[in-house]
Amino acid sequence: MKRLRCRGIAAIEAALVMFATTSLLVAFVHCGRLALDCAAVDRAASAAARYLAAVPLEILHDAAQRGIALAAARNLVDETLAAASVDVSGLQVDFLCDPGPCASLPPATTPAKAGVQVVVLFHDTLYPNDYPTQVSSYAEVNRDN
Image (cartoon, rainbow, N blue to C red; front, side, top):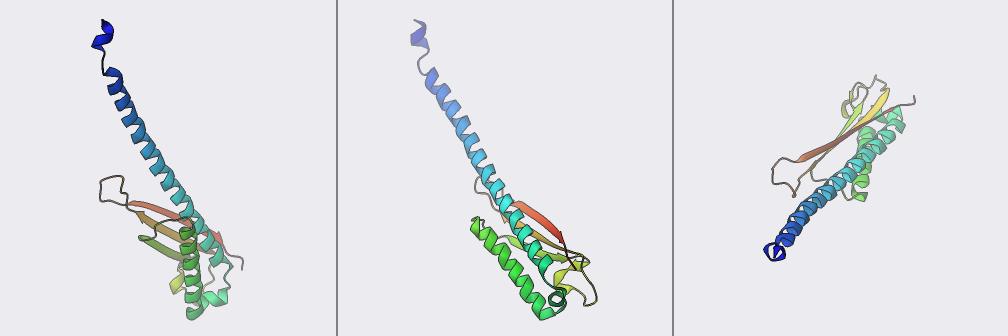
């Protein structure tokens, strides 16, 4: 007699448990992908900072050659992020030499450090808000003079 009253309860419980576990699975996959993208952004910033630290001072003091070196470092960031399949539509890259930006390095200064800040904006389709998730990484390397 008790068995007849419990019809459908197991199906309802199964549906609720499956909904909860599916939601958790989607959240875990999304957070895992975001963690992989964060690691790729960190690798890109580190690679570009190591490249800038190895560039000779004569190149950094000459405006034309400095532009070529900064473009090569930017290309290195783009290639690293493209290899990890990171969407670079909201990409911002800043190159910093010890006293300030590398793009406006005064001729008499000798930077002791080279730094790269990479910022990527991710527009999540999973969550309905209009605010993008910002992932940024800053890598700084001492120069060998």
